[in-house]
Image (cartoon, rainbow, N blue to C red; front, side):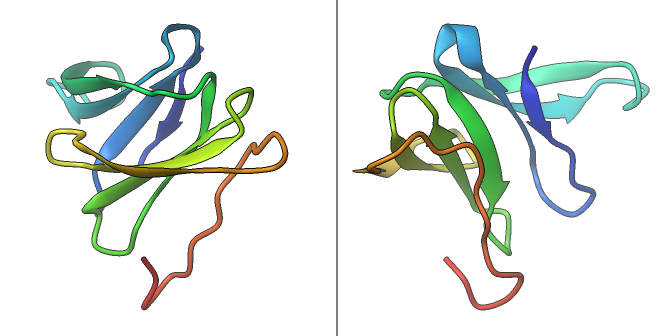
Length: 101
């Protein structure tokens, strides 16, 4: 089952844990039942599970559980922007509401 970000003012994203991938989504018809995958990218570290976007929706942050990393992607086409190793198994991401990354 994918984990999703559903935001009215930011891009919608999903983590595809079994495929070690993430996807950007957009509504196709009724947003309650139908979505289209706009783009997809592989995540270098295993088990993408935590997702968050920055304030303006231009960056997607991905916490990889088994991979113990935090990666950043652009939301336009999921271009990889960077990754840092973490010492433990991350499950979530908290970003500031204003003035953050």
